[in-house]
Image 1 (tube, protein in one colour):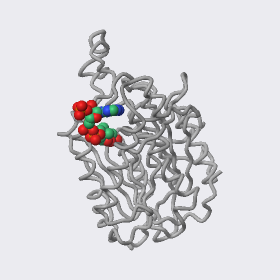
Image 2 (cartoon, protein in one colour; image 1 turned 120 degrees about the vertical axis):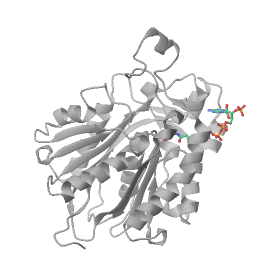
Image 3 (cartoon, rainbow, N blue to C red; image 1 turned 135 degrees about the vertical axis):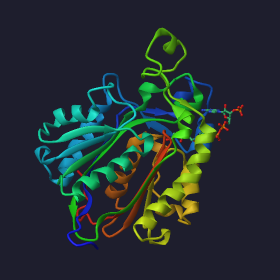
Image 4 (spheres, helix red, strand yellow; image 1 turned 45 degrees about the horizontal axis):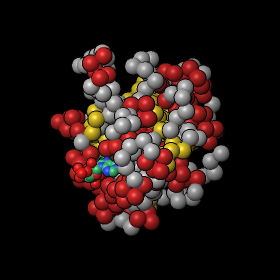
Length: 338
Ligand code: UT7
């Protein structure tokens, strides 16, 4: 331990998922797919879809309010809000600024972070540095998405995979030896074409042609992303563990990005971890991108799967391509989330 080292961890959690459930059977009516195919290839049974009029900042704000209540921290104590999202309400202002206004977190700086589905872990690692450096004391990190708004609901290759939701955490100083012990972030921009939304930006500004070409929707090479994910999830977790001077044998709970049960199983295999140490809720929510890890973590904490003194690894991969992992020694006393 370095002299005067600050330990930073999660002191509150909250989530918000829309009430509307869309089952695989519902999707059978929209595209040429089947419940059997989706369950077998992905593990997904249903997902939540935001009601009309609900945007990413609404889910993010609701999740943030719960995280603040859980932490016993008021909005005006927050120094920084980071929102990881690929589906902001609009290009600008950022979702983080919209949340800052909703919460009346008047002293908080605010910015969005774009790292695809790895964004939440990137955000936790980033927020941690601000507190470790002494610049800030309390940071709100939110992963929030309304993927349903950028899906081509006629494309069975993508529309069955994703869902909407948000998860938030409050970061603050924790007891010595607790909190974020190690991390590993990475990117491989050369793989950017594998998962992208090509239209509406400065390369292809919105026009009748971009709309006609369905460029305002998610485009994905599923097989290649699958190969990348199965390789990187285990490796990223191992790098973060190395950074924390720990090994896979020290891990009590793995909270992986919830994209596909087969990707999660392959990560567990690489880490030689039994599946009972791995949090899985992809069956209920599908892939909620940057929201998937905080939603899974909150469920794990609330249901007692994550306990005090557990070593927890968060690991994700996503568009960019990106990957991110962090190792957390869980020291939160009160695991009762309102
Ligand atoms: O957060 C990161 C986001 N992205 C991901 O995590 C995606 C990673 N990739 C995957 O999870 C998998 O690659 C998929 C679930 C997308 C696809 O599973 P797969 O086992 O790799 O299937 P495939 O792409 O090899 O497709 C097999 C067949 C194809 O038919 P043909 O060409 O063999 O006749 C697809 O057209 O399955 C077909 N298919 C479907 N069939 C029924 C693709 N989507 C569907 C569908 N229902 N929804």
